[in-house]
Image (cartoon, rainbow, N blue to C red; front, side, top):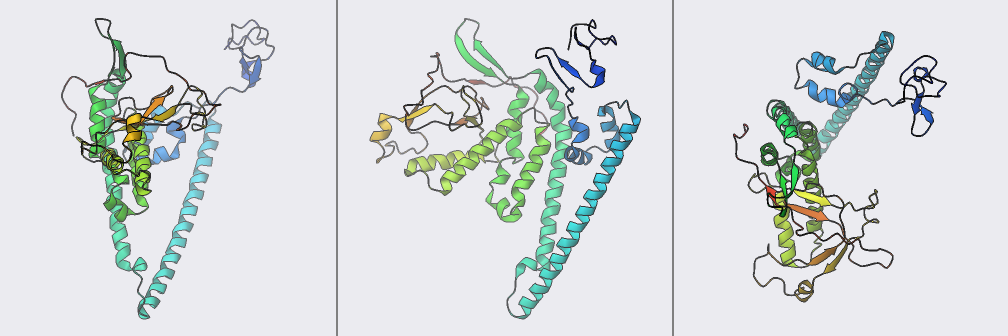
Length: 391
């Protein structure tokens, strides 16, 4: 940043006029503020993220060559050697800690086995320390490890080649058609639609809520899901974002179901139906969800900054006791009208959305009235059918 080398005694072009120092002297001239500071240093995630390296190492045999291409050029060879020695020292410390943890777990296991033998001799058997249980756990972990490895290889072989076309054909909003009519059509590419079906096939949301997985893997259920999402997100063309929104919506609905939040039967049946589709492993049944929370004020205090108001409809108030007369639990009139302005909508092409609103109008909380538009809905235009990627 700067306007030439007039003010630098060393003739450095990066210094601004009138500046008596030099950027080579570890000072950085911010022209807009007249304030000097060190230049920004951005970490290289490919070389500095050890977790990312460990995951990719399983799927890239030539790890050294792969990261060698991305490694920045170090002008100071001595500094590079010091960094390398520091990394080796950290790895040795990490290995020593792992060894101590394994030794501690082994001692706990031996102590538990002795206690189990004592209880069995006294007629008080405990299957938690049974050898058969240990073998079963090893089999489960072996299956989990193989599942993540094979999925990671699929990300490299199938998803990565699709990223180029997804970057070239990003979603775009068509405001008006050829005749000038306001249409608000959202266009997405074929790979984006295919990723939704693939997420259902790979059970990226389903496995966190499947009762069999929970009973089998216990606390490992979420860890397995997050491990797969960690590998998937970097190769999904940003489809990991709507999956995160969907997972959050499913967790919310599951909590409402467990606590029997809805008193009316037809509302509970509707929520159960939506939850089953958010967590489905069938591509034709799986749906995604958006979370439409952010308003003009922004900020992390979403609840305190929410000005949207939810007012019950007259039909809802009159039918609170009777419920729907049609007998169809999944198609009933809207229960509330929303008044407000949502500034940002995540996962705009989602099938459903969860939004946030206050149920009572506060005197000190004004309502943001949105600008009237011809249509409040955005139809999703599917892509032209083409050759489907390998499934």
